[in-house]
Image (cartoon, rainbow, N blue to C red; front, side):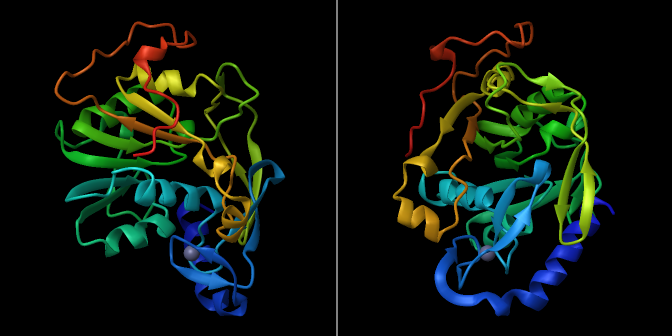
Length: 272
Ligand SMILES: [Zn+2]
């Protein structure tokens, strides 16, 4: 079953069953609904996550949405957004915002508005104010090319939320790891990764010409609130910005594993 079909099956299942979870103990900040509890979702490698019974958000999505809406200036003012491999739980609230000009695109998903090969994006330079590109780069063979394309299609000063599966125990990214098993409502399936990012993920983004803000704000939130929202406190935010007036050079010749100087990467956790 394809990724798109799994998403459709899950959305249908949620539409039929979410009312069974009605209650007040927990709250999803993506769809604004309260529940007795979240559902349990078994992800890659048997990792358990808390899924919103209604919109299907996982703890990491609720961290992402909290960052975009409350911890950054990403959604202030008129903003044109490209949402790549769109998650329904982020697409729905984005499309309700009157200041957001929304477009979704994906390599093969029928759930997106357009098709897109991120290695060769068909958008003009400096098209978007913001791009959301979550858990995509790990599946693309030439991820450096994709990162450069992300930067190219952003306006100067534009932002990109670029989340990926990262193993913090790895100093350097591992190319072509073994396929991992995942499971959802539609059964077990094999998730094929082109690579598993390590702690050098941030420097890879910086080498594509981004200023990267790394935030672990969920870890620092009051445990009661993080619990109520079912946040994945291990979710580290990678919020990239294309430099504004003085456009930075792309360090294309740099050694991929070589950490950049602290000056080349913006400071750790700078909530706006
Ligand atoms: Zn929800």
